[in-house]
Image 1 (spheres, rainbow, N blue to C red):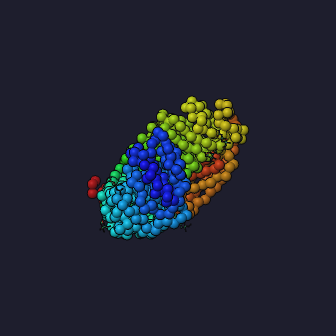
Image 2: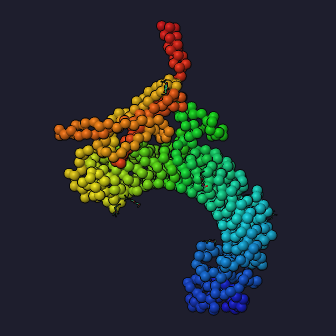
Image 3: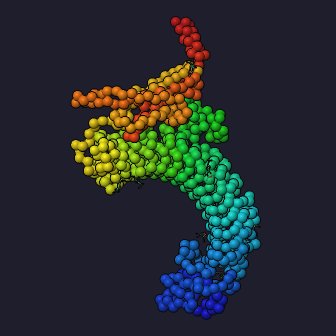
Length: 625
Ligand SMILES: *[C@@H]1O[C@H](CO)[C@@H](O)[C@H](O)[C@H]1NC(C)=O
Ligand SMILES: *[C@@H]1O[C@H](CO)[C@@H](O)[C@H](O)[C@H]1NC(C)=O
Ligand SMILES: *[C@@H]1O[C@H](CO)[C@@H](O)[C@H](O)[C@H]1NC(C)=O
Ligand SMILES: *[C@@H]1O[C@H](CO)[C@@H](O)[C@H](O)[C@H]1NC(C)=O
Ligand SMILES: *[C@@H]1O[C@H](CO)[C@@H](O)[C@H](O)[C@H]1NC(C)=O
Ligand SMILES: *[C@@H]1O[C@H](CO)[C@@H](O)[C@H](O)[C@H]1NC(C)=O
Ligand SMILES: *[C@@H]1O[C@H](CO)[C@@H](O)[C@H](O)[C@H]1NC(C)=O
C-alpha cells in the first residue's frame, strides 16, 4: 500500500495525514509496527510530510487523503478543524506565498470533501461555479483572504453548516446572499471584516445558532436587523464602535442565550433594544461608555410623574413599546444569569434598575463610577435575590454601609478590591451568610472605634487570604495592617469624616421664585472639603453654590473641649421653573470620606394654580356647608 505514497513523493507536496483507524486500513499503515513512510515523519497519530515542497493541489489526491497541508511547519492545530470528519481536505498556503485567487478546482475529489479550509490565501471572490462541485461540503473556512463582498448567487445549495470568513475585506452583503444556505447553516463567522451596515433581515437563516460579527465597522444597528434568526443562540458584535442600538434591534431572536456587545460605544442600556430577548442568559456590555443604568425611558428625565403616567411623547419610542410601563431597564430578562457591564462609566444606578433580573447569578460592575450607589443607596442590589457573584473592583468606593448590600442573601463571592475603602460599617456584610470569598484591599482605612469589629470578623469568616487592609488614620496607626492593631487601639478620639449637622429642607415654591437649600457638616479634620449638590441623583455641575467654613467648639467628652470646623453649603436656585422640581441632596467630602444628606423635595406651583386651589376651597366650603 505504500505504493500509494508514490505520487506524493514524486511530486514535492507537503502532505499531512491524520490517521484514523478506518483510514489506516486503507493506507495499510500498521499502527502497531508504526512504520513511517519516508520522507515523512511520524509522531503519535500524525504523519507529517510537510518537508516536501510543491505548489498547488495535487492532481490525483489519493482517496484516503484526510488532510492535505501545504508547507506548514505545525500540524497539531489541524486537529481542531479536521478531527473526526469522515473526509477532510485542508488546503493552506504558505503564509507569505499567495497561492489561490479563487476556490481551486479539486477535481473528482470535490464531491466527497466535507471540510475545506482555504484560509490564508488570496481569494477575492466566491462563485456558484467554483463551489458547486462540493456537494457534501459542511464546513468552509475562507478566513484570511481578500473577499470584498458576498454577492447574491455566491452559494449553490450545499449542505453547509459552518461558514467562516473571518479577516477578509467584506463590506457588503447582498440581499439574498445566504438564501441557498438557509436550511443548513448553523455557524457563520464574519469577524474582522469591513461591514458598516447590516441590511435588515439579511440573515434569513432559521437554523443558524452562532453568528459572529466582531471587529467590523457597524456603528448603528437598526430594528429588525436580525429578524429571521429564530434558532440563534449566540451573537457576538464586539469591537465595532456601535453607538446606537435602535429599538427592536434584536427583535425576533427568541432563542438567544448569549449576547456580546463588549468594546463598543454604547451609552445606555435600554429596554427598547433589549426588547424580545426573552431567553437571554448572558449579556456582555463591558468596555462601552455606558453611563447610567436607568430606565429605558431616561429620555424623560423629569420623573416627577408617577411612573404610570410616564409620557413618551418626546422619546420617539415606537408604539409597540409603549405598553411597557416599567421603570426597570432589564424587565423581561428574567432568565439572564450573567450581566457584564464592567469598564464603563456607569455612575448612576436607579432604584429598581435590576428589578426583573430574578435569575441573575453574576453581576460584573468593575471599574465603573458607582461609589455613591454603594455609599448612599438603599439596597441597590436587593432585587437580585439569586446573585452569587458581585464584582465591584475599582469603583472608588470609600465606604460600605449596612444598606449597601442588603438583600444579597445568596451571595458567595464579593470583590471590593482596588477601592480605597475607608470605612466599613459594623455588620455591613451580616446578611450575606453564604459568602465564601470577600476580596478587599485598601490602605485607606479609618481605624477608629467603629472598625473594631472588622479584623475579628474577617478572621472568624476565614477571609484573611483575600483581605489586605491597612490604616491611614489615626496617625498613630498609619500604614499598619488592620490585623496587627490591638483591639484597645481602635478608639474614637475624633471624627475626621464629615458628619451632616444640618439637612436640606423640603419646600414648595411658586414659579419664578428664588429658592435656597442649605446643608452643613462638621469634621475634626482640617483636610479640605469638597461640596456637591445633586438633583434626582445627578450632580449639578453649573449650579450656583456658596460655601462657608466656621470654627465651632464642641464638647469632646470627658470634659474636653475640642474645636471642630463646620462647613455650610448653600444651593441657590434662581427663578425656578417646573423643571426645577425634584429631590435635592448635598454631598460633603474630604479625604476621609463623603457624607450624604437626606433628599429634600422641591415642588413648584404656578400662581394661577394657587389661586384655583383657593377658589376651589372657597367654593367647596360654601356649597357643602
Ligand atoms: C467518494 O466516496 C465514495 C463512497 O463514500 C467512493 O465510492 C468514491 O470513490 C469517492 N470518490 C472520490 C473521488 O474519492
Ligand atoms: C488568520 O491570520 C491570523 C493572523 O493574521 C492568524 O492568527 C489566524 O490563525 C489565521 N486564521 C486561520 C484560519 O488560519
Ligand atoms: C441557489 O442555488 C442554485 C443552484 O444551486 C442557483 O441556481 C441559484 O442562483 C442560487 N441562488 C442564490 C440566490 O444564490
Ligand atoms: C466613541 O464615541 C466618541 C464620541 O462620540 C468618539 O470620539 C469615539 O471615537 C468613538 N469610538 C469609537 C471606537 O467609535
Ligand atoms: C489592590 O489590588 C490591585 C490589583 O490587584 C492593585 O492594583 C492595587 O494597587 C491594590 N491596592 C492597594 C491599596 O493595595
Ligand atoms: C498589601 O498591600 C500593601 C500595600 O498596598 C502591599 O505592599 C503588600 O505587599 C500587600 N500584601 C499582600 C499580602 O498582598
Ligand atoms: C431672585 O434673585 C435675583 C438675583 O439676585 C433678583 O434680581 C430677583 O429679584 C430675585 N427674585 C425674587 C422673586 O426674589
